[in-house]
Length: 136
Image 1 (cartoon, one colour):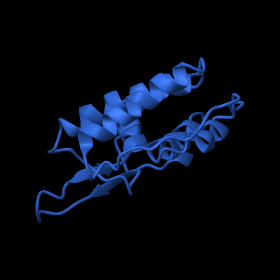
Image 2 (cartoon, rainbow, N blue to C red):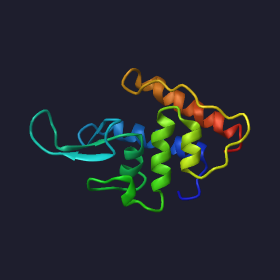
Image 3 (tube, rainbow, N blue to C red):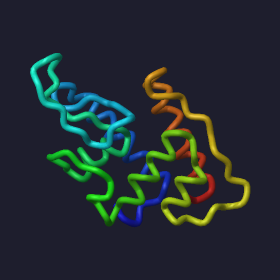
């Protein structure tokens, strides 16, 4: 995963997000938490709350405890880049990945996950296609 292209990283993250969404007893999506364990009996709180990057931590990186990006030093920059990408901040995400910005590349609007989950994922996949058009 270390040498992954930005477009591939986004596609992987969306795949992992769909996986955690399909496991509501173990995960809840909260774009404000990396990979946060909440325990308790109220409203089935014995699960992890994960953001887009947290989904990658959970599925691809197989995190089994509460985790933060700095605990994955080889891919920390990728996890932080995903946080930028999910907000439409392509240039900041590419900088985080230490990718040279191609001429003409622009940030994009991404629907907020809480407003429309399907549109968020489609916007992210559109972003991956956009990045791929720059060979990224």
